[in-house]
Amino acid sequence: MTREDFIRHVEATQKPFRRFLVALCCGDSQLADDIAQESYIKGYLSSESFRDDDKFASWIYRIGYNTFLNHRRSLKHFSGYAEAEIITADDKADSSFRYQALYSALDRLTPAERTSILLYYMEGYSIREISGIENVSEDAVKKHLQRGRQHLKGLLGKME
Picture 1: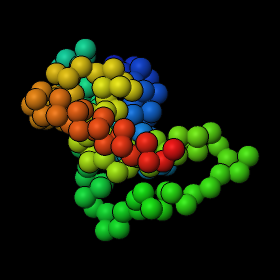
Picture 2 (picture 1 turned 45 degrees about the vertical axis):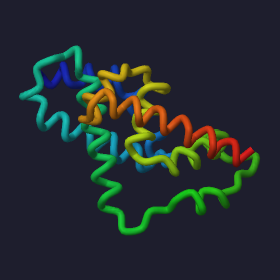
Picture 3 (picture 1 turned 45 degrees about the horizontal axis):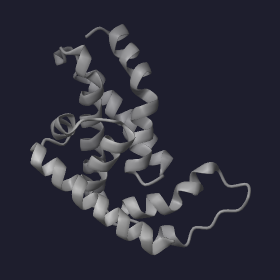
């Protein structure tokens, strides 16, 4: 893949990829930007071996997902739901706070459930494509979706 091809693909995937990562990072846009940047760098460094232009989005999502998992593993302390619950917003807060309940609920899902839910419902990926991104079977993706929906329903119901 040429440098120009890579730039074209980045421009085409940048907004949905960042939206996915912000949701995966439960609203932490700075962390999402860091993971996106690191993912694109990793992608660029290995772009010479990439051959299928039609699957660039799935390929970069997989790199992003793995980068997110590696980041989570490296954390010694992970701020979670309890800390997010006490965050308050005033009238001048940016619009991301309107999704605070959803981000708090997503934070309580396993990374596999969260990723499956986000890729399926937010990004419109098929179960087959998600299985490729997560490197699991299609049945595992279906199970992640089922459990994730159940958990979200229970968590969001408690927050109302």
